[in-house]
Image (cartoon, rainbow, N blue to C red; front, side):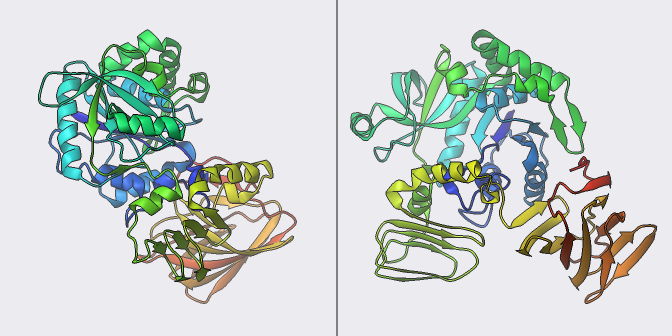
Length: 473
């Protein structure tokens, strides 16, 4: 039995402003109508001997992750929440420990949640080959047949071929991201593959190799699972135990040291969508080799990626450029400089700018809200509540709120009263009043909220009751 392990952490800083800390690239539909997380699991459909997946994600992304799995009809084995980021070795260790709890020993198929693979049939074939090798005790990594001298990927050098139909080979060595000269040499030699970050191995085998090469990390993860608690659909691992684990990739912790490593070459139209140049490479192009998304007009523009979300974007006389527009930020960069977008994110974080963390549209387990306008003592939001959902029972110390229903029906708890609001009806929530909003209807509830007061931060929320288990915030 194969258990997919989807690694859905990370923040995707090189895809800012589309990707933000609280809404990262794996949760965005930047490639097709599904998100990258959804595509990761959808491309496995049709395979035999496939069990329910395990998903490891950041704690703050838990509700969006669970909802996106539900949207595509996937019931996970479990969703493991990382309280802090610790790279791939601890994440894989958590999943392996969890899977071995009941005495089973499945083959784990480790998949980052941000890849594109075009040839699904070939991908399935390679997974089947990997499953046979993993059952024999090997640790398999999938090496991507390189198509260009990429400097943004690590490389793996092929060793001796292994007998059998898989055309797998031993791993001679792992190579860090090279400069352009060495990348060209690797490509021309035919002896190297890109390191994809996809793996297959039995849970017991990776545990034994972690015991050998990273025993302290494994011990921390074992304790984190043992002291974890089940919270709704999520497994919350113990923060203190997991926080003591060394932040290492599985390549460095195990694969570079093990004698059991094997590489299977994969040439299936793979891309990790790690930059806007990657989005240009994989996107559908017009007659001038431009990838255009949204309301875009161009004149004498070639080989460019232009993405407009909330307004018209017009460009003249550009070649090999990237322009990305969202409701609160615009990025302009030559295509060959997009790797440096993460430096802009570092500047935003240093200045404590909200644009590094979230969009104007903020997602919650009950729906979403978007900030329309704000000033020193007021803020206006558009709020959407999903059918049957409800916000927490709460109060504020520093602000009052005025709600006007635009569409749908809202049930409002205000103090010891309940009020049913229809379209174009409103209510006022004075400062300090205990209140709750819920949608008892079958269509989304949309309303406009006007906040006023001396402080309008999201941390001025005292939660008295919450169906989603969130604490005071």
